[in-house]
Length: 347
Ligand SMILES: [Zn+2]
Ligand SMILES: [Zn+2]
Image (tube, rainbow, N blue to C red; front, side, top):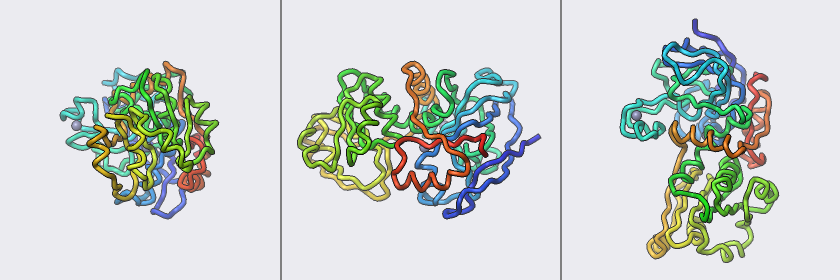
């Protein structure tokens, strides 16, 4: 019998969160049921819920940093058993057969990636995310959360962890790599920890030095402020890899000037407007500007396993269901140091 569970939803782009009841289907033979314990608040939840990224299916239950415990498994499932710690990231399904899925990039499925919320599931029902007590999904799209990572600190790894992880792996970050992380929010604080654990010489570039102590504690070797004009002179032609997590308008030319010959600047944040930059420094310096988004299932599992092996996880502030509307405003204002995670027991 389908299960009625509580969830937090926004009824419109401007409404505060309210508790509603949603229905979760019975698991199919290849599906699992997860009792959700924690759900991270990602900036993209806010952009989506507030209608800043296009059409929204309201009432909207956001949440794609989901950590919980398996409570039921379909008869065909071998990957999980009841009691296992499990997580769901930004998507809950894909075709599994196209060339991108076969590459482990199910997030770029050529058929259709089914997003964890604000999408229509294969059953024709709008998908509802992690700000809820339970979720049902195909086991192939569910991640194993290593038991050594507390569930609250594991939740953000499903999006804010894999997002910087993908370009770090793609561009072979490791010992000898001079890495710059631009911005020290949810994505940035994971990029610093991952880069440091991979052996990179890691530099944070932030607007001010306000979060310097935190950045150094996370493993950054150096910390610079863009408001200091000397920064750009001192760091000129330095970095092999720069990961930019800022989703505001940027001086792209200034960032490019910090890359060494052949260096790569990767955008993870999505500024609302087109950005402009000069081509000459790219030609003469063999420099690249590129972008990256989340990652597929193999990459997401890899970052969870890497974090467990290295003893790192997201730095989180656990909040109650009643604090989510206020937390959204604080995230937009850039107030939180790291990641808000909702304690689903308070729902
Ligand atoms: Zn996200
Ligand atoms: Zn596919």
